[in-house]
Length: 285
Image (cartoon, rainbow, N blue to C red; front, side):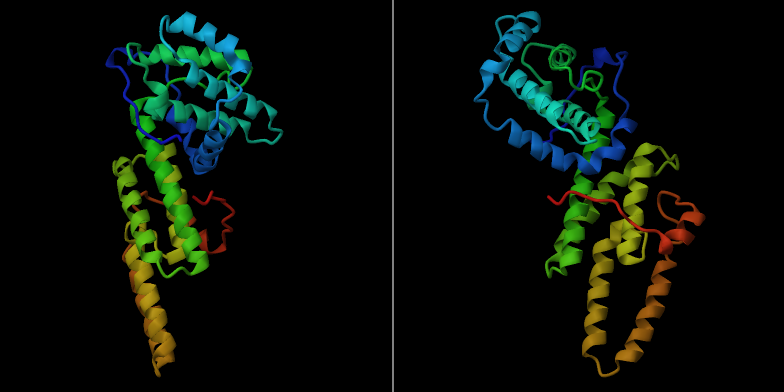
C-alpha cells in the first residue's frame, strides 16, 4: 500500500523547474480518495506483460542493470486507468499522482540515481501512455511539506465532520486530532501574507465557524467539549431557560474573543458567513 512520506531533493538541483505548490492546494481535499484508488488499481501487478516493452525500454534508457519495472508497471497501469475514466476529474487525478510520486520515498528515490532521472523516467511513461503528460514533474520540498500538511488536515476534518453528523460520543479525541493538525498547518501563514496555501486554510477556518461559531480551529476540541457540557446542562437542569440564556451570553463573549482570524479573514467574509452555503465535499477516510 502507498503511504505519504515526504522525500528529499538534491541541493544541486535548486535551479530546475518545479511544479508550483499553488496548483495542488485546491485539489488536496480529494487526494485521499485518489490515493485509495491508486492503491486499489495497482495492488496486483498480474498484467505486467502489457507494459513489459515499455518498462524494459525505461530500464535500458535510465537505469542500466537496475530494475525499475515495479514502479513502471504501477504508474503505467494507473495512467491507463485514468485514461479510461470518462468523468471530469482526470486533471485532479494527475495532480494527485504527481504529489504521490514526489512525496513517497518508494517512488521518488532509486538507489544510485538522482531524483531528476527518476522523474525523467516517469515523463517517458506518461508520454507513452498519453496521459498526464504535462503533470508529472518535481515539486519543491517546502511545497510537498505544505501539501502533506493540508492532506492530513483534510483527512482529520473529514473524520471530524462525520463524527459531528453522527453525534458520535468519541468526538473529542477526533476534534483534538484535527486541532493538532491545524496547529501544525498554521505556521506558514503567520507572516501575514495570503497565498494559495493560506487561502486553503481559510476555507477550513470557515468550516470551523460553521460547526462551532468560532474561527479558532486550534481550540475546536475545547469548544466542542464546552458545547456538549452546556447541552447536558440545559437538558437536565430544572432551570433550563435560565441556563440557555447564559449559554447564549457566553457564546457571544467567546466568539468576540477572536474578532479576527489568524489568517486575517476579511470582515465582509465574516458578516456573510451566516448566509453562505457550504457545498464542499470531503472524502471520508
